[in-house]
Amino acid sequence: MRLQDKVAIVTGAASGMGAATARLFAREGAKVIVADMLEAEGQAVADSIKSNSGEARFQRLDVSSETDWDAAVAATLATYGKIDILINNAGVSGSDPDRLSIATWDRQMSINAKGVFLGMRAVIPVMQKAKSGSIVNTSSISGVVGQTFVHMGYNASKGAVRTMSKAAAVQFARDGIRVNSVHPGLMPAMRTSVMSADPTVRAAMLKAIPMRREGKVDEVANANLFLASDEASYITGIEVPVDGGFLAM
Ligand SMILES: NC(=O)c1ccc[n+]([C@@H]2O[C@H](COP(=O)([O-])OP(=O)(O)OC[C@H]3O[C@@H](n4cnc5c(N)ncnc54)[C@H](O)[C@@H]3O)[C@@H](O)[C@H]2O)c1
Image (cartoon, rainbow, N blue to C red; front, side):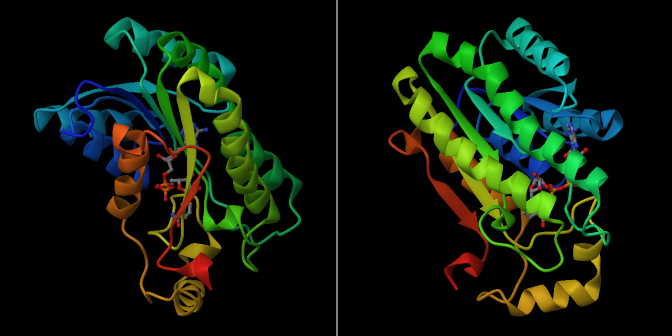
């Protein structure tokens, strides 16, 4: 198994790509902390992993809260004794019809960008002590290019994830910590999506994708798995699009 005996925290694991990643990691032998604000859904993901002979625990976590992160790291260490992997996947969508909303900017930066920073800030001291760790931060194609239907706060937050991943990679490489970013393209709509959930908008987006289809959550989970695993032992500071060729155009 590719993650045998590793301990992984996956944020936003109650839904979508986070849930797919948590399930895949457990199948590959990891002990998984299913971290999310959605308690019933997150507990259900952890329960389903356990009912398939995997090891998982739900942890309530608001990624934008420093105290929640402290509690999540303490609970993980108390239960499993170490943290090998952090998948900073939690996020909120950027498709707000009010393109100049300040509230949307603040929310996206607080959860998508500061949440990723707080996650790294919480686990890096633990990984430094172990001289080992792998962090995968979920950015987006929106972290690389602008889009007409996306609030610029989303692009800014995902761009911040892209560059803070590279900064952390170079700053903590000598501690044995690898940090990479994954950039999903058009995927099943997020819970918080408004415009990108609209079938007309999605049809237009599909036309811009060389593969002419949306991605599957497992295709992102597989990229997370490779980067999290020891198979990627000499890979740090890279960005991996999972986008059907969108960014290659
Ligand atoms: N779906 C897409 O088209 C797409 C494309 C590119 C990137 N992404 C990114 O991928 C990641 C996962 O998206 P998804 O499609 O699975 O979306 P989703 O809405 O299905 O899942 C997001 C999860 O994050 C959780 N979350 C939101 N705010 C949180 C907070 N403050 N603290 C803890 N958990 C929180 C939600 O409860 C939810 O379970 C996000 O970072 C998103 O921005 C999504």
